[in-house]
Length: 300
Image (cartoon, rainbow, N blue to C red; front, side, top):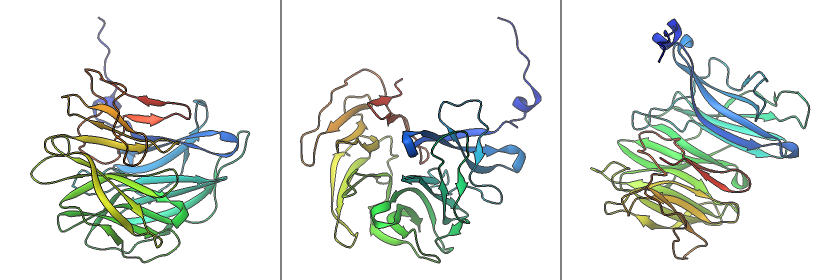
């Protein structure tokens, strides 16, 4: 094998780091790839970029230029700093910067080589406080962000309105210790998330929870659906038809299982001596996704 010398950029870690890729569908079902880029040459600043999926020749467009720096200090390791949603041709971005939630909307072009254009200036939605935010999703029917607030060493599920400023997060649910990896059902009526308690790490013992939303948006009837007692769960997600998917390791391997509907028995259609999950050091980790037609998974 021929030795290949490292470039100076590789040797000193000067190349940007890429993380948390996501696909969103715009007008005419055009797919757009959004990802985070951490730039050593900008003192480690993290920014969001976008380009049409599959068009490797296109120049990526920066969505959060300096001085924006997308990062979270939740649990020290952070992650899960960007949430996205699309309504018609409007791309809604919400991100964490310096412990606060920000929002900006962009217009996605319908066709051709045009780039997305900002519809407004970025707006800070939350006030500064003695807490950290992370791992949010956008609840467009209720015009809010739902995510994690870490305060005094414990996590809370909280919400922030997308159309207000200088807000204090509104608590929706208080887990015993820690929570994260929340996901909203396609009809917007149910919310699933993961909880774990000290002294366990989430990859040692964690549980899947789910609740419904009341008339005023409050989270009601939260209950444990799976995991716990030495079983770990990873990355719950909803399929377009309302099925709930999660990885769990009761067999010794993280395998995917399905709940076809609320209160239905869990099914394990893909048993294998392989892992479909990984240790949850940070928020924003993902090994499975819906590609528009089927569920795909990274397996090792």
